[in-house]
Image (cartoon, rainbow, N blue to C red; front, side):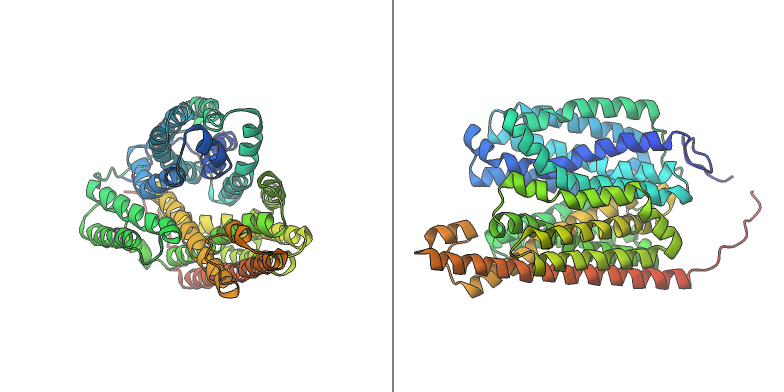
Length: 503
């Protein structure tokens, strides 16, 4: 007897309420993504209200991303095993409770703990939303649905500082967390009412040791990446964290290869399509994450905009993504030219946009605006194709694990991009202007006269240009590598065999 997905009332054309369900899960996804960036604008308020130190602020930001990135694979596996609807509802509930605790926190320790709890809910939401999309949409409309899902990711980046800045102008800092609660309640109600249940019909036994090893391993590696720029890459703290993470990840791989029901089937890495999507995703996230991190400094330190003004001027990136994806241009391109070519075209546009910001945006916003629009077009064309390539390379019953892999690659690549491109910026800056200060504002404050301040500002702009160009090269290399590997996988894939009679 052929197994079927438990409690999954989909049809060959997709679930009848699939677009309404997509809207619900995208709202939940947006809430999680906003929390990745919204806290940055509240740092001055938190420092004053809670008496938070620099280390406290770092942990308030990092506790969320560390817990989320460490649990993505485990959360995806849990959604496959126990039901994606259940895990989506649990993620919304945990995220809402964590937001309430964060908004009412009275000291730094309480806020850090609440942010860690929100990270657990965020990991469940990040994996189950994409897994549900794969389950309720048929092959024809799935690319467009993933394009809309990817659009929400871009909106989260652009809208976080904007929403945070507006709210802090009218309310106290806790409001940026409490606003999540009504969204979580409405989302939870809609999930319970609308979303169909689906899970892996094989009912594999829980891989508890695999979950523990992957969580510790990913947390150790991500913490080393996050703390490297601040503590020094060769410091004992960073090296120890990286070593622990790599050892546990190696143990995770060995364990997964030795058991009958692994959380992440390592044989996926023999699939050329999966390898191509994975390699491309890491390099693309590396270039994009690091370059977008540099963009905020470019707008503020080079062009002289304030935090809120800089946030407003990143909006063209998100707007171009929204327009192209909502109109279905990205999905149509994938259908017309295929996934490999769509990725190559999109990532070439991304690289061109980054190069435009580096080479043309040094003295005016015009070059930066051109780069943002071109980047947005590239993201709209390539990111849905990349996510679809990963998800289609993994069996549908493992959609949660596939979403966990996709999210983990994004977190890992983004963190590595910020660290490495930040290091390129700092080394170029230090080589041009040998100053003891660790940041541009400190260096400008220590300058003796206007001429020295001008040299320092020019050196920082040159460092930004160099690091942005490195990011552009990484994006282009990642897109072309993914395109080549995916094209090769499609050429060597065996033709589908005729369906065998049902037993």
